[in-house]
Image (cartoon, rainbow, N blue to C red; front, side, top):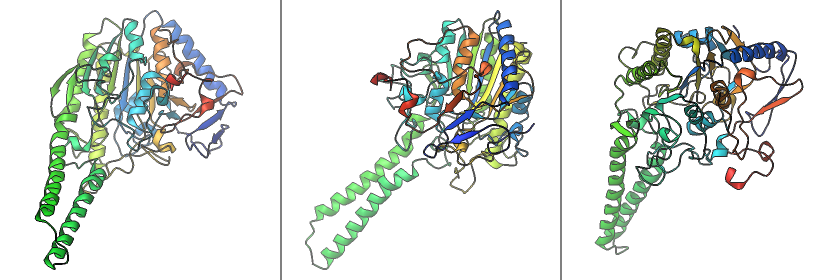
Length: 489
C-alpha cells in the first residue's frame, strides 16, 4: 500500500498559495469517482446500522509525525497496533490538522470549526496555554461533539491531555474544564506535558529566563564593577546605598527565578480526576499504564449504553517518558520508546473492545494533534522529535509537516478493511461525522459555519473545489460567512 504524494502523476491537482504554504485547492478528477462510490456505499451501510448507535473511541497522539507509524512507511519504529488498526479500516493519507499547535488544533477537533472562530488562536509566539492559572480557554458558548453526544444519551469521557483551559474567574468555577464541555468523566492533565514537569529534562523557559534574568543580572554586574572602579579611583563619588540597592535587586531577581523554578511544577503539572487534583506534582511512573487502565475501566462500565471515549495521549510531547518495560527498547532512543509505549496502549484499548464484543459496534479513530516537533533536542543533545516523512517543516509552522498527520478509522463490517483514501480530510471532519452517526442534529445557532465535512460521505459534484486553510492565526475574509457579527470572531 503506497502513500501518494502531491507532485506525482495521479490525475489530482493542487494549487498552493504563496502566502499560505498550507492552503490547498483540490479539483475533482476521474480518480474521485471510485472513491466516491465507496463512500456512498459506506454511507448506505452506515444508515443500515442506525438502529444501534455506535460507540466512539477517539485516540489522539501529541506531536506524532506522519512518518512515525509503520503503516505510513516507517521501517524502524515498531507500531504493530496502530498498523493493525489501519489494516482493519481506512488510512487517510491527506489528513490535516487545523493548526500546527496543540491548543488551536484541539479546539478545532472538538468543535469542528477553525480555532480563530472560537478565539482559540493567538498572534503570540507561544500560541498555547502553559499555565494552569491562565484565565482563557474554550468558551462555554462553543458546542463540542461531547455535548451533542451527551444530549443523545451517550456516556462521555476524556482521559489524558485537555489543554483547552480550566477556569475563568477563580480556581473553582471550572468554566473551561472538560466537565463543562460535555464530558461526564475526566482523568488527566488540564494543561500540557512540558520539560519543566519532569526533573532533569530542562525547561521550555530557557529563552525567556535568559532575557528576563541573565541579561539583567549581567547589566547589574557590569554596573557594580564599573561603579566600584570609578569609586576606587576617586573619579566619582558613589554612595554605599547604590551598591546595596543593586545587590538587593540582583538577589531579588535570583530569588524570583528560584521560586518560579521550584513552584512551577507543582502548580502546573498535576493529574486531575474530574475536578479533584489526585497527584501533585505529576508522577510519570507507569503513567500510560494507569491512564490506559482507566480507559479500559470506563469501557467496561458502559457496555450496556453507547459511549464516547476520547483518549488524548501525553505521548510524544516532551518531556518524553516511558515505563521500564519500554525504556531503552526502541531504535530511536527516548522518542521511540514513548511511541512504542503509546502503541501498546492503543493495542490494549483495541483488545478490550474485542473482549467486550464491542469492536463491531465501535468507530475507532486515531490521529495526532499536529506534526512532529522536528527541531526538539534535549539539553544533552538527544533528538526528541519525530519524523514528518517527506514533508517540509513541523510543529509550530504552516508547512506541510506541521499539519499533515496520521488519520485512521476502523469500524468492522461498516468500513472496508485495508482501504486507503487520498482525498483531503481534516480533524475538523470528526465533529459532524460523530454527530451524524450518533443521530444528533448539528448546531443551528452558529454565527459561522462548521468547517468539517462528513468523513463517511465526503462526496462532491464534479468540478467542485474544497479549500482547506491552515494558519497560525488569521482566517482570510472570503472564507468567512458574509459580514459575520463581530462576536463570532
